[in-house]
Image (cartoon, rainbow, N blue to C red):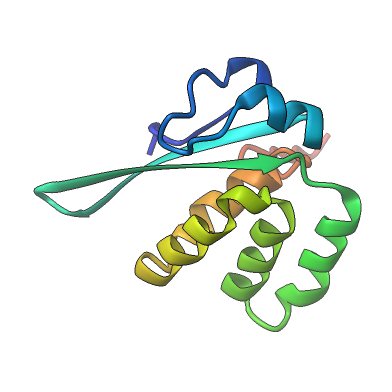
Length: 125
């Protein structure tokens, strides 16, 4: 779905839904990213949710790879909790309880920041 995106900290506008000052977050965490998702649990309902994440680091990615063999969803949840700012953690926990597949879309977006690509081509020369 094209409605999902990660915006750089410079693109984050007003976080009224999160009640967080972007400038304070930048000062505290450095580079931050807002992840917006629009979920459609049924044909009549659209749920828009947003979270703010720190840029994933290599150690977090290494933990993800190590735990992926135990279960992809669990590994993605761990990866997301490693990188979400504490102010949004409770909201993410509640949303994952209601929408467990959320971890797949959101986690893959965070992995893309570290170089995971869905568009990779290999050509025999």
